[in-house]
Amino acid sequence: MAELALENITYVYGERTPFEIKALDDVSLTVREGSVTGIIGHTGSGKSTLVQLLNGLERPTSGRVLLDGKDIWEKPKEIKKIRFRVGLVMQYPEYQLFEETIRADIAFGPKNMGLSEEEINHRVKEATEFVGLDPILLDKSPFDLSGGQKRRAAIAGVMAMRPEILVLDEPAAGLDPRGRDIILKGIRDYGKKTGSTVIIVSHSMEDMATYCDDIIVMSHGKVYLSGTRDEVFAHAGKLTEVGLDVPQITRLALLLEERGIPLPHGIYTVDAALDALRSLFR
Amino acid sequence: MKNIALGQYYPAESPIHRLDARMKVILAILYIVCTFLCKNVLCFAALACSSILLILISRIPLRTVLRAIRPIIFIMLFTAVINLFFTKGEVLLFSWWKLQIYREGIYSAVFMVVRIIVLILGTSLFLTYTTTPIALTDAIESLLSPLRIFHAPIHEFAMMMTIALRFIPTLSEETSKIMNAQKARGVDFSEGGLIRRAKSLVPILIPLFVSSFRRADELATAMECRCYRGGKGRTKMTIPRLHVRDFVALFLMVAFGAGIVLLNRYGYGYTM
Image 1 (cartoon, rainbow over the protein chains, first blue to last red):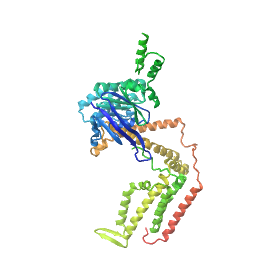
Image 2 (image 1 turned 30 degrees about the vertical axis):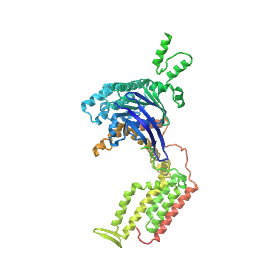
Image 3 (image 1 turned 135 degrees about the horizontal axis):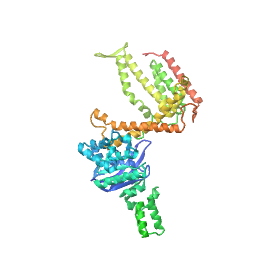
Image 4 (image 1 turned 90 degrees about the vertical axis):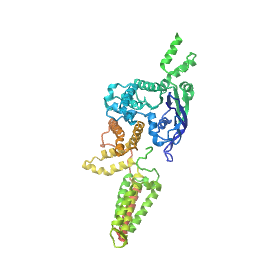
């Protein structure tokens, strides 16, 4: 297992041109080993840039990305190895499917790793289970699948490489509520079962509250807040300052509390709220 | 792949920028004709001076202008060498084995290089650097419109060009996204021999084709939803008008061409 940390990362687009933009400004953070960490922030807060630094797709303008305490850019020629250890699922990954069958596409990553046929088959099967994809679909062409199924296949393609750190940029964007839940639950399962660290980028507070242990809030290229879920959501006021909010159900619980109804802290899901309210009426 | 400038349009306030795009197309063509009218030293000197003058008027930094020449340096050198060694003349300056350099060869090599530089500078200064791609397609549509009599699909052609230009940045962004996604799955584009590299393009090209077709389909639907029915009866949001300055520019260009023709008569030395 591996620990991931960023140290004084700054990233500038189009340096020394009229279009210069500072996407990340002196970002330092540590991702807890084996946790599910959410990175949240508005469009343009630098979160998508951040994830591309984690597996060495982009090189920081200054600062270091540390994997197990070692700079990933120490040997630039071996950056490919880093990409197998830190798996990245980009936004709308279904557009990257290209093989004739879903099975071949999921196997593409493991094949590039040079694994044996047997191991590849095993991993494809395992990844398919994680994302909840029907095995019948494995021999179909990507074009015969629905949007949600394609998304799951694409995520499985990265999971099959069994990365120690799995990074996903908006894995549930544009899906219906059921599809969102299946995918996010599958991702969390992957992290818990393999002991890998999972990093999810999103702008949905609801998803973050339900599936993440730790949360990092980004704003204007800087880390605005970070900590465990409870720590971050305790700062409801600070979140609204940057145009974010605690989940609606948490807000409701807080409002009820203000009106003198004694609810426990840390209610992030409708189910939790239901339990708390039920116990009050008992 | 970030921030690639579409074309080379350089935004600035200059008399050339202000000219009507249609007039600039005509001026560029006339200027090309001028470069081919040149026959002797005087003419080429005048031509070079006119190019320098154009750069100054256009207010585009010299470095940006020179960037236009960089891609053709090889062709330039090649032409120069061919002309240098293969032009036969009267005064032999240098001879070694089968290689012979005549004075005329030197002249003709220099002339060709000046001609190529001026050709590129002229077209870039009148067209790509000072005219936005959209204005340029509009101008081409308008200049070709007489061909409608022969049922040539001018409007459709212009619309295709506009759409193509519009999608260059989109597709380049898409390409870099897909490349990153496949790199994350372990594709290495800089590794292995030719065949392996070509093979590593497959995971890029297929998704790119698929998404291009999807985009084309979506765009066509969106255009139909907005009742696009081709060029017939379509009006323009900005109607270009020719101003006095456009005619002044045309006059100057014609005068320059006439000057070149006159200089051809009074030339001395080597004549092409």
